[in-house]
Structures are given as structure tokens and as C-alpha cells.
Amino acid sequence: MNDDEEAAPYAARERFWRGESLAFTSMEPGDAELIQHWRADPVAAREIGVWPGPLHELHERLVSYVEDRDRDDFLILLADDTPIGHTALHSQDFADGTAEAFLLLAPEHRGKGHAAAALAALTDLAFGELPLHRLEAVTHTENAAALATLKGAGFTQEGVRRSSCLHRGRRHDNALLALLRTEWEAQTRPRSWDHV
Image (tube, rainbow, N blue to C red):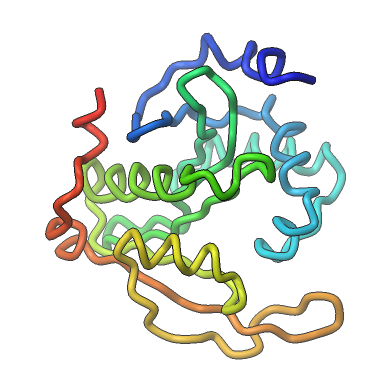
């Protein structure tokens, strides 16, 4: 499938949030096959700590996400309608003002600055539109690309969850990072609403 064929079904999808070079659209259960393909990438599977199960299970999970008020899931689209990833705010607790950020890019779209743009748009959504005070992210301590992207977005590494992940028979550490509303407010970069 070429990029034009991949982008065609997404041309009519509403973009409700924009970033510097991309937009978010709500994820739908029909996106399961695309998400499954991205999750099957060995690098992604290792970094998110989950090997893809049966497609019907992922479809059922996406159906449940639509009704889950503790999370918001989005497809990331380029200006030409090409879907390049999945991002989410999950474990949202509006009483405490906390949530966790998730980001998964398609293998062919990594290393092009899209992760930084998506993370900037996600933090703008979290702090500019939602009553959040703290946004967390968790990744393997060996995931240099994710750590660099998170730190570039202003996240501070607060600690390490030692031996908290099992992969290929070995225990791995996870880094815990967070961005506070006051830290986001102090950033001088253009905001998502400046790109409309």
C-alpha cells in the first residue's frame, strides 16, 4: 500500500487538534488493523512492553476506549492525511489533575521530528484545554530516543522504577518523567492554537 492509499480513508476524518506539522483525530475501532501493524514492529513492541495479541482483542479494546472517560486516544495525521501514529492521555484523574501520556509512531515515521511535534500538541491539549496539573510518562531507561524527546518537551526524570518490566527473560528498569502545568506555562514555543 502506498502513502496515497493509506491516507485516503483519513481525508474525511475531523481534525479537532493541530500541532506544528500534524493533527489529531479521534481514534475509532476501525483503526485496529493499522494500530496492530504499528504495534507488531519489534522495536515498538519492546518499548511499549506489549506484544500484539489477536486483532479482534485490539478491536474490542478500541471499542472500550470510546466509552472510557479516563482516557482520550488519537490518531496522528500529517497534513497530507497520512496516519503516522497513536497518542493518548490515559489514567486521567481530573480531581487530582493528573494523566499519563502515550505515544507510538509508525516505524517509517520515526526520527523525523514527528514525535516532538506530537508531544508538544499533546501537552498543549493536556494543559491548554483540560484541567490537568501533572502529565507523566514512563519508558524504558534504555530508550534513548523517547527520553530525549520527553526531556526536549520539558519533562523531568523523577526516578526509576527498578526491574519493573520483563522482556525476553530479562528484567528492565523504567524511567518515570513528568511535566507540570507551571513548567508548560513557562515554555516560550508556539502553542497548538497558533498553528490553526
